[in-house]
Length: 78
Image (tube, rainbow, N blue to C red):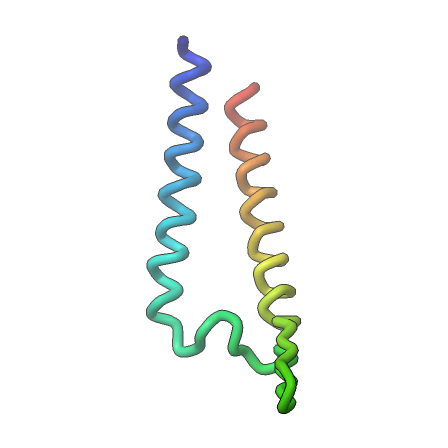
């Protein structure tokens, strides 16, 4: 039962951290998906959009978060 409580605590912290990031992103001076480097091509028959810069930034952010989670989990398993 003690291990289950640790996991609930860890997942609660993870959800709190993610919700804080989402809440704080509304105060940023730029909007996600509209960054310089995102490819947006429009023509009369359609539109092409590829968020290149947004994808790179989100990839780096998620890599940091996942590594942080794995570090916290490894500290609890000692």
